[in-house]
Amino acid sequence: MALTIVGQDGSPRLRMGRGPRAALALLAAVMATACSDQTSPLPVGVTSLAAGSNHTCGLTGSGAASCWGYNYYGQLGDGSTDSATLYIRATPAAVAGALAFAGLTSGANHTCGLTSGGAAYCWGYNFYGQLGHGSTANGLSPSVVGGLAFESLTAGGSHTCGLTSGGAAYCWGYNLGGDLGDSTTIQRLAPVAVVGALTFASLTAGYFHTCGLTSGGAAYCWGYNAYGALGDSTTTNRLAPVAVALGPSFASLSAGYYHTCGLTSGGAAYCWGSNFYGELGDSSTTQHVTPVAVAGGLAFASLTAGYFHTCGLTRDRVAYCWGYNSHGELGDGTTTSRLTPVAVAGGIRFVSLTVGRNHTCARTGGGAAYCWGYNYYGELGDSSTTDRLSPARVVGF
Image 1 (cartoon, rainbow, N blue to C red):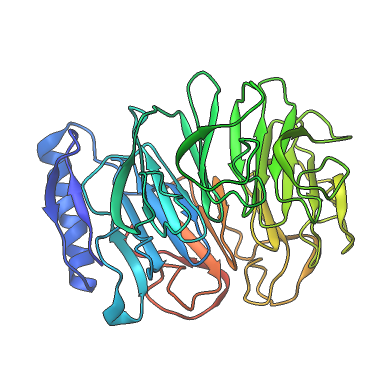
Image 2: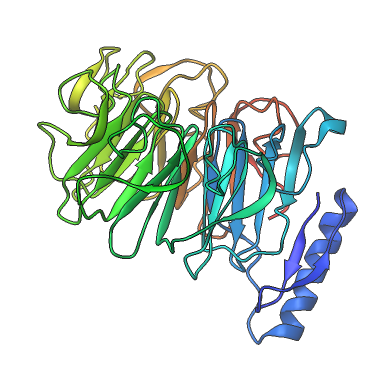
């Protein structure tokens, strides 16, 4: 493990090395730093998690970012590609640069962070310009996305989008299916405005599509639509935002690989798009081009859509997942795919969930991080490369 402790001003105070002894030293150093810097303890638990295809990132209360898992393209942001360890990092590694982030988002093989001042930084795979710094060179450490201040970011398969404080949406990177919403299929190396003059309250990027939600709860999507992920009752790609058809007013959206899910203010979950493995949760494997209710009648507080599975957190903080489960990504102790929601094993109460390609991660109210599912590249962060069928504790937080 390699971690950096930062002070309240964001400056690096102590850089730790790797191994179990370093973890113990980290705890002692954090306590010492907290006592010397401030009257209340410095938070060392994870405050947010972001899962990519085969990597995961976490953010602490101080704004320090750490990532773990697959690092062939530098998506962990620690300045290396871990070629000596076959691109596997099974425990959290500090993102280089000692930046203090307010939020993180992970795409397929890239990661982005947003500072409290609205500056966007990205790192990792950049063949399509998804890092937004004007070139296609991969980034092993954070590089700034210039020209705009953002309020939020969302990373898709090979594209990234950001929302300004005024609700204007910008996207950059891969655009063959209209992922960027600029009415073209031209790859963009820097942010370009989404057309249509819509004002969004939130954005979510799927693998080849993007969706936005207005403050009034109207959902719009654009991009690749062969499986109905845009929810406009067709399977036609859209180069600009199109309204989701026949759906209710939504409070939040989450875009996955070829599907999308939405949550109403009352906690009712709806999904649409591909349904090969039951990722829509409607007790079938039938593709739907408009929203369909998730079976079971559960009231959710949040939803997160992955490649071929989806997870939700109920209002009493119980996690449920459905869809593909060959590596245990549903966390129910089996490798059986599910067509309807099934409770994650272990009885742990979580406050947030994030879904990757074949793994899922969650955090507790106390700042502990847990992951389960596929772990070939160490994306579960439990210091192993063993798949887990139920939640395993991420080390180092």
